Amino acid sequence: MIAAIRGTHDILPGEVEKWQHVERCARVLCERYGYAEVRTPVIEREELFAKGTGETTDIVQKEMYAFTDKSGDRITLRPEATPSMVRAYIEHNLGQVLPAAKLYALGPMFRYERPQKGRYRQFHQLDVEVFGMEDPAVDAEVIDLAWSLISTLEIAQAELVINSVGCPTCRPVFQEALLAALGSDLPKLCGDCQRRATTNPLRIYDCKVPADQPIIDALPHSVDYLCEPCATHYAGVKGHLDAISLPWRESHRLVRGLDYYVRTTFEVLGQTLGAQNALLGGGRYDGLVKRLGGADHAGIGFAAGLERLVLALPDSAAIAATPRAFIVAIGEDGRAAAWLLLRELRQSGLAAQMEFEARGVRAQMKRADRLAARVTLIVGGDELARGEVTLRDMTTGEQRAVARDTVVAAVRELL
RNA sequence: GUGGGUGUAGCUCAAUGGUAGAGCACCGGCCUGUGGCGCCGGUGGUUGCGGGUUCAAUUCCCGUCAUCCACCCCA
Image (cartoon, rainbow, N blue to C red; front, side):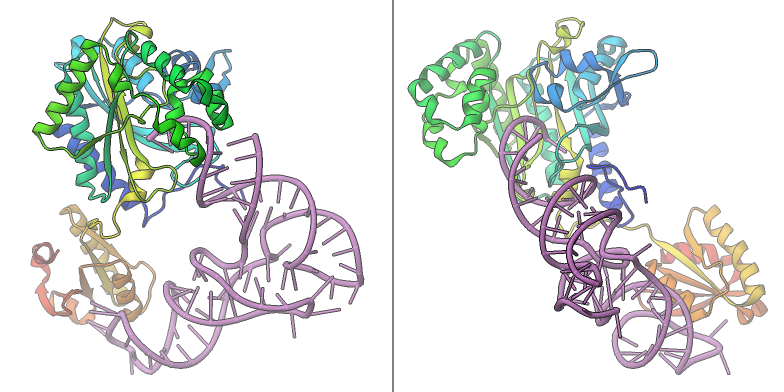
């Protein structure tokens, strides 16, 4: 047997309905907020992510599915969507083409990681991006959209966390203060933290080692080191969030893993996901468009993990099945008549099925039940002789005969 | 990349160094034209794969693959 490769999954009937529900909610909300869908390729030039996501990130250093194609080009399966969106924005001059560059995308991403709960090698994201708008209200709109998705999906116990990590002007000052405060305590921290201190000091805030916590708790906060423009921007974001009563919580420990984030960062944390508790995460990335060869346009966005949203869906999530009809045919003549009736129902836009094998009525009824048919049409010798079809409401068990030429209307009423 | 747990029927799980089981699901019957509840019967497994120890391995050992959990990191 040839099995699906590690970290990838088939999404089968029974599970796929949840996915459709999540995707439907995402699209409806994005359209409602004025975001336009964009579909970018799954493969890109490797350098797009090296430059965009960041040469120093783990994603680029060890998690990319990269290869050389037959022409000798370095290609990679996208590990995240933002650089692709930025590329498309620049390449097609979307800032000019669209009235507002508010975009969203839905699709698979690939990272070569060790799979665990909520983390896979092929996973799927909803990606939302806004280009060319710097106002704090835009940050708030993006966060509002993200939170609305969580509410719409009825994901309970989720938490909205925000922070500001400053900009190239003020972050170095903060980082210096951070290392200074760490001072002689650095050797007391875990090995990972000591490594982080040199590679990416902000990530020390991510440490989960209990022994390190007292030291980390005493470290300075980025929001206390913001320059004037960043502080004003951040206050503006919080003001807009408060005005619409979003239940945000500030966490100075919210530092995001990608190099390009500036100013606002945010995440929504779930309770049911084990260690991978981020349902979605994002932030502002002013400067990225320029770095990838475009004009100096601002940018902000987030990515939501569809696997994680599906995992976090409440059991009670009412995912409406398509109401369907089932035709039970008796005898050769019955099956011939059912075949025509089936076609007629479908042409009228109704979901209908029948049993093609010559099986007993009982077996066919059982099949109808298993398919959760809302109404069963019975076509046998008796019905044919009278020019009728028997309709059975599968919920109530009530049954009645209906003239053949009024069947479609009668079924439509019951569905 | 690191550490640990688990691989037996479609699913959830039993069992013993000596012929592999249950529940659910599926198919059929009880009910010759009526689903759900009930009863009866049936299909379905080289016990993940490979090797080793043994008279004999699903069981013990090693490897491998997969999966789960955690670290790293991230959605």
